[in-house]
Length: 328
Image (cartoon, rainbow, N blue to C red; front, side, top):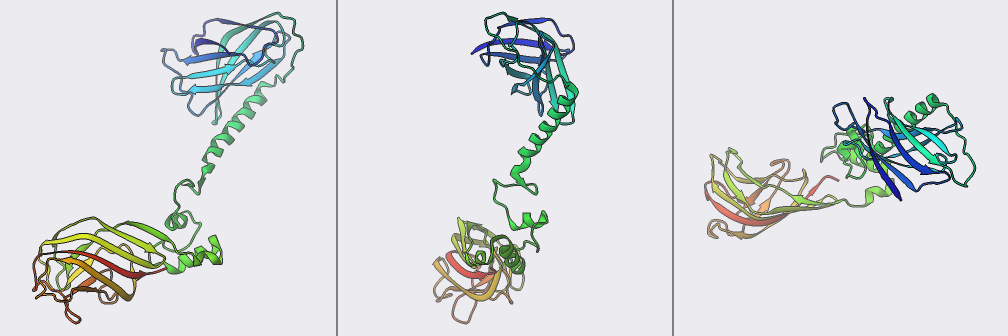
């Protein structure tokens, strides 16, 4: 490929002459830099670029170019056979069109087509106004087509949540974790009857908290890595270490909160793998949760009947796992 580079000031165009040979096609590339009066680049962002060429026999040929660097006003054109079909002077006008539509022209480029043995002219329409409108329409369609990678403004290459579908008016409900009716309705409408039969598997981190049942207080705590796994409505929580440093005014039974999903029913189970609490204080350490009594929290049991309280200890470290049911 043969290439040439030219710079055009759109306010003060200087005569520019380039050469080609009759009958050539797709072998010469014109690299163009469009500049404004101050010498700065013309911003071609969002534009389409093309050339209309006035041939020696009076016809006009249009062909598209490629924007190489929009911010720096750089574009490129490959000369087609239709432009070099006849020997003589060809006036080239560069046309930039935005979807608004608005158009910018750069002129004073002359292509001298040197004679050769090749014959045959290619005729094209010279209805420039109609072409400007058509190119503007095509550019507008292209710009909207690029946005078709979204559904109701949601990028389809990202995960689409129920809350986003509700916000877009494509689903119903509140999008909350306990919104079982909406989840069921939307699963049926979006995925069919069988969609409800497949469990949703998710995982992530959670942040366990400590509070008191009588006075929640503001206990000082630290926590190690804490993760959850949810399969359908079953939730498993794991905490590497939860350390109570001071009560911070908390009183009553110790309660562990921060559950990543709302507890649905009373069925739950938990094990404590390690505890710094003396066995004489808590000989049978485990967990208990009753959503109606302690929504979103579970309590530490020191025996089958008694809960661990702020009167038993003011500091501890525990490592634990806990399982419970949430809403579908």
